[in-house]
Length: 312
Length: 98
Image (cartoon, rainbow over all chains, first blue to last red; front, side, top):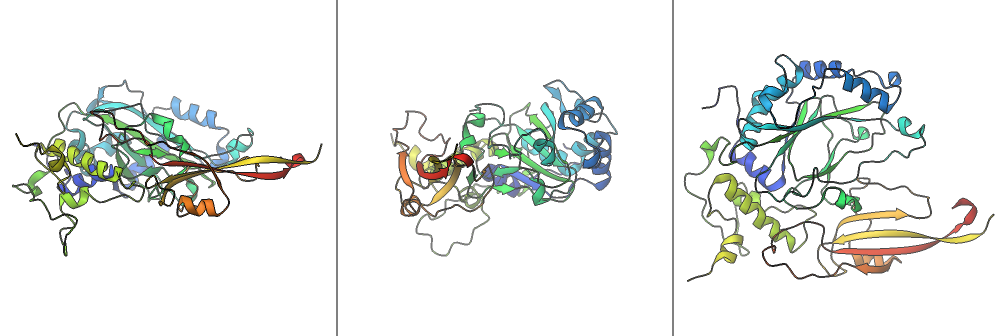
């Protein structure tokens, strides 16, 4: 049983996460929590900041972001009454966490990313640039997955260079910054959002920080969480059909009307998908859904059934 | 010291399949003349619709990613963008300003 103040994800949200690797919650964090967080980290007008190192040092020395050992239970990571505890205890946030990595998740690490306006780099004769595309951590071929919470405590404008990410990239196995050669990818998204927005991403999502050309510092607090239990049917499955969706007609589809079915969500392409690997993405998404739903026979548009058909 | 010299511009196009007339799904550009700085995320629309369009605009193709067999047991793993086409242009620049 979950306590009543946990709002678990729906099946539709889980299918979206399985297909695209992220969920976005605009302005989900109350303004009072956003203000308290920014006050505690010592947010000040840009004109009062001396340098990148000095500001980071000041924030690091403050107690706003606790120093937490890797592997600490999320419930032990943030003190009661702190803005970060309030953030992870919001019913919709706690519900999303528990739906994806379960109760009892563990903190891998957290970090306050601060993106500074160009003058901080130019005066050190550095060229301000956006962060290259990368996948966090290292090559990670697990079936289990971690999530990352990206918390934007203030409104982010386009000029501030909000986090850039690539929907649907989470199931690709690459090695961290090896993808830095790519500058732009069709369908890339740049976070522009109201204060208190939370982006929850699969650990494999390709992303990078944008260049901040505004005159304000940009803050983004990231929390990486790992599961401590099998990630099966952890969301609110009351809307999951009791019997598996029947296979749909494929290729010759007539006038299809089931755009919200799980199969439809899992076989929706991203603008950057290649013609052939698009089908591998569908296969990998269907396998991911088998894992999440604990249904070893699930399929989307026959992609798995076809290649598993080996009559005795 | 002044005079004319040559600098390379490099255009990387990632296409939807292995034919040069396939649609562009990702792209990068680096300018050896120093006249233009580029970076990740600086454009949401590709400079060309296909590799062929770039060819017809004067870009010289100098490398294409090979088609590799799929390792047994690893046929369905996806990773890096698969269809990489590397183009170049050589630009004459004033040596004093290069």
